[in-house]
Length: 393
Ligand SMILES: Cc1cc2nc3c(=O)[nH]c(=O)nc-3n(C[C@H](O)[C@H](O)[C@H](O)COP(=O)(O)OP(=O)(O)OC[C@H]3O[C@@H](n4cnc5c(N)ncnc54)[C@H](O)[C@@H]3O)c2cc1C
Image (cartoon, rainbow, N blue to C red):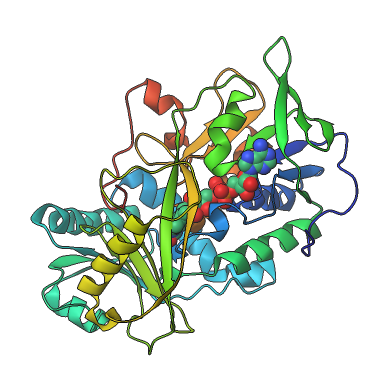
């Protein structure tokens, strides 16, 4: 396929860094490496940039999470989103429409209250607690009595996932990153001393001392090419979009108890996804009738104005999910030169900040404090990251 920013010349035989995967994790890291002056960065993407979850997500953006670790990391991104279009020289369609997390049950209402205190302590982009009157004001179309509390982050919102990917691809290419579409990494060579020496691809071999595994739903398979086991599972997430309707919803919304997230685009379409607790999440991009019914039921309950509105498309994407739902960022244990940037369930909103910390770590060898808690070794140590404000089944 052709797309502005994609390399048209043959795959190089050497590189300083090979990034496996042209989703937002891989392309943002490659872009940030080039910004730091790292030359000869090559991205190998099996399909085309954005073909994975980065082009199939619900597009929501926030940094207001309950845990110190998530809020700190994601705030780097939320700050970057505010000016990303200017920086990349193309419109990501980031809409600073606000983001509201809604809670119904006592436990979730209390979690939201404590989260706002933590956000203040951490100094992330401001959040405020919301009560039923605030919710009526911010979400007039929400069913009366649907939610009892939550929090609101004014600087959150949503961006267009394709526009964002295209913006990153072209900005990275302008800085010299070579992004090769249609190139699958099939092997990672490791020396007897345990250091990366190169990759084998469907278009030939590349000698390199550094490989970044940003292969999304296939990250576990890519790490395994170097003999590194990852505790991730490939899972399917589904979303729907409706026909355009008159504006009724301004902020992005997370329905904590219903496990849903949604927003209304500037063209009037309602976009959202829900999770079904305990439902199988197969490794496939086929959509399910169960997912469609669950989304229709939960969203019409929350927003009665949606009753009778037609769903025009349903789609799915695959992500790799870790046991604590937090990403894996850091060195791969036991293999020098192999870095991990995967396990992303909320990786679209996190892309800009994750790219920065990952590039800093690779370029300097020093892992920034915001990234350090996400090392894969946390699972072996029995220290998962507890994050309560995510909508995962
Ligand atoms: C329905 C749905 C809704 C979501 N909603 C949101 C949301 O609202 N907000 C949010 O922040 N996140 C959301 N997400 C999650 C988000 O989309 C992902 O966390 C994020 O896109 C992951 O980015 P990535 O770059 O790690 O992976 P991907 O975008 O999946 O990219 C990985 C790339 O690696 C390539 N690849 C794999 N194996 C190889 C190989 N061997 N060689 C070369 N290339 C390879 C793939 O082709 C793919 O393009 C959602 C996801 C889905 C599916």
